[in-house]
Image (tube, rainbow, N blue to C red; front, side):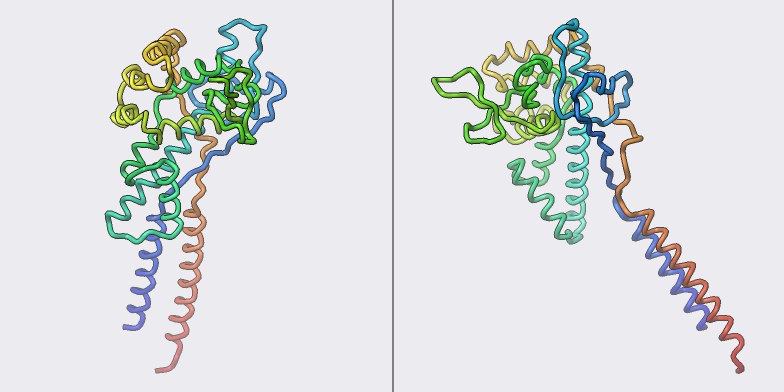
Length: 307
């Protein structure tokens, strides 16, 4: 009977441990390649639908090449950053979704999970976790590229070249990370935001569209998986030009076949599993082997004890 009990406990411990390990949620991170861009020759060309997640600390757009070549230089340097930001936002959204399911199932949240989701609620000015997912949802890469192209002159504007600002986002005059424009508005100086890299600019762009009340209709259309050309119609409030702005975006997307980039993704070679699932599983296996060895030794000893 004693042998049976020990064997049962051992098997039960193994099953419980394995189930716990199997229940660990996978999470990933990108192996981002950071490149100090002081020469156009350092740019990794985009010539395939699977992209290397590379971030450059500046933009280099050559003025003496043809317009098509300048556009390609812009895409080579900006497209990877867009995919990086979208991947990171989607990863966070998946985590929020898992937390929501835990709450629905009555499973207590870990302190760090509560802090994580509450900080996003504040950042996106969300009213609920469901609303947070709507506000965080990214949209088609083609639309991001089109807006970045229009707002930065395909990366050739002063604000893009000096401050990695692809969308002409304004800043206060007291912001140390800002660039003063040579233009004024109502006799007031204009300052625009300065970013460490274009990914910061893109992340701020998604945040602006995610939390500003002016884009309520846009977010609803985006969450409904609306066609990109229908979606951009709800961006008329992004610019003072209104419908003329959205029509320009449409032409940029159509004339440059930007929708092709909607199927581009980050190469799986740079997506790393950062959970400790395999580590803990191996630890469990090693411990089970140790327990089996001890059990075998214990049973052998017990058998040799005179009755």
